[in-house]
Length: 402
View 1: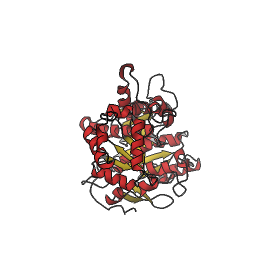
View 2 (view 1 turned 90 degrees about the vertical axis):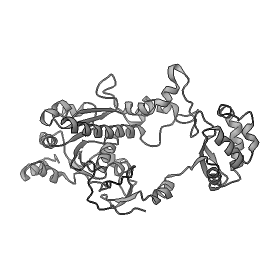
View 3 (view 1 turned 90 degrees about the horizontal axis):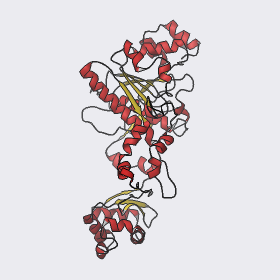
View 4 (view 1 turned 120 degrees about the vertical axis):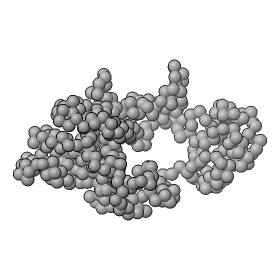
């Protein structure tokens, strides 16, 4: 499946940019991996020994954690025990020439170590500092612990996701991903701004605010005390038919109707019952939505005589949007991803694994797709580059500070 990474001398957008990251879990690592994709040098600071605790989430990728290999390719690992003065001094020295610091430590932890934007700005006015937290740098929730599921709950995501009987979380870490995306784009905008002003800036990204932005549709739907969208499983809350339907071979087809023209084509070409289009129970989306159960029975009866592939073919013929409900094996083998050559091979401490190229194919440069590091793999080289002597590095190692 994977193809080799292309060798190219074409410059990448963030070549020459150095990012230091005090990161763990998902939000900050996802942000910095995307910066690395664009060519930035990302130095990941980890605890000596175990490193980022996300390394131990599971062992599904040849003994490595699935979350970790996803968010940590193309990085260098610097192991530092920041509770030891010598290690903290080494990090401070490194930050004097860095371009960006990203951190998602516990609330207030970076500031207590002297790594706030105000403190660092004096030594390096060009440094961009991006703090990622659950609730932000101030406000009554500032010091609350925040995990992805908790933020999904606080942001109202659970209230509109699931079935009428059971609220459900997303199947991946949407709050972490949202925060990581806004941190990533905020760092890019800060680099652009620094190009104009010559100075760095402070970015304060909140997981609650990131996911809150993604919740704007249901919030506006419930504007001024109106009823919120009902939880409707994989179906659309207000458009019907729009959602999953079983085919006769056990497969599931997802389809979506957007207007009355498509409804007529669906009745003519897919259901083979043209008169249904003008049935007063179904002659508008409002009526179809009110009579979901009756219409669902009709659709399932028609689809039950067909395979999922046959249903999709009829939907394509009628120009109705549709998709197969793939499992993970189906996505690994997706013909569109293969046809567009979206897979590359990435190194890890346990050998090469396939990895998707970042979204957004560019004709100007190739994304960086370098290995996932082991804990502390680059410690000595990075510290020597920062100006520490061999004796200094040996002393740090002797005290288990690296």
